[in-house]
Image (tube, rainbow, N blue to C red; front, side):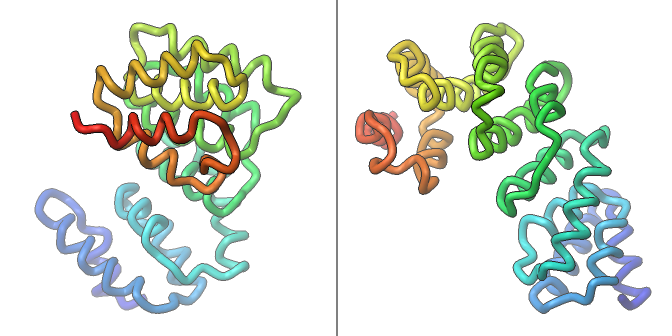
Length: 215
């Protein structure tokens, strides 16, 4: 990577971030060599790395093997938004994350860990291990019961709890949160997943009507 481009990407203070983002979006339109990918993953800005992981479309198997190890090494990063980007990437590419660690992420309610919780609920649901069902249900119930937890996490928790248990209580919790707190868009996004289509669970049409009802 040219030194000039690298300087732009590493200079993200204040208004310079926009320039760095434009530069990144330009260079990721083509296939990057492995060394350039490693360079981008070592940038100063976690936000820019997240943008790269979300938008680059040309990863090959060698790139993905490296990124899988990179993610495992960075799950304890202090930047929780960055960690959520890593978990979302791992979910999309079906990487194996340490399951116990994912469950531990659900237990942290402080600071901006909500980003991580939202991402890890998706990961756990898409990689459901039946031997962990009792602990998963317990942790998601604690999220639903918590007065500290953001409603976005509660919506996802209620949805997953309903899909796992099919208990009416969680359907009621979900619909109440979506309607009264206006989380229709979040429910719409969840219902767009192939595994959440009408073919795979009852009440899909009910939830779809709720998700698209006028506020």
